Image (cartoon, rainbow, N blue to C red; front, side, top):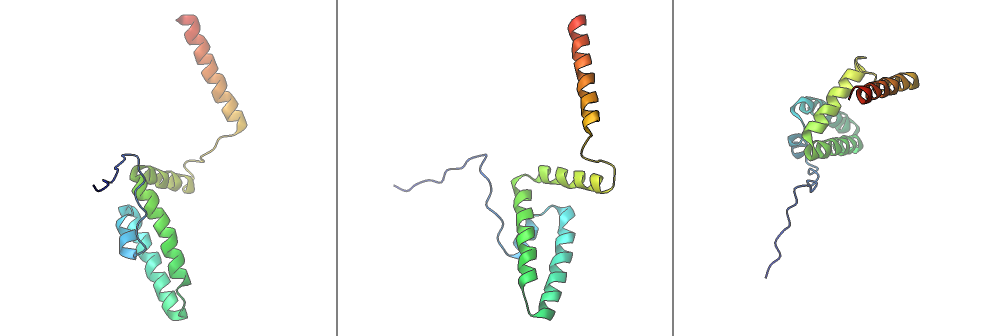
Length: 118
């Protein structure tokens, strides 16, 4: 008798292989160009310096990004869009303590009004 593999819906997919083409295959289309640029630049500098350290560093970083993308592409895309909004100054990503207290007070007022009218 042979053991059958167990397939779980919530299992994390394996990390992409180290080959640049395999890493690129797991990236979002909007990130592939940046990967290509960084990969080519690192290869050129490494060829000139006769040192592959930068290439390995680039591959490690992009392998991690590809693994996150592969695990949940939509969550990764959402994170990218949010980061773009923050970098563009459209979304600060945080609120002050005073803003938080005001928000809580508004919600409490709404809850109290609902209780008295309900």
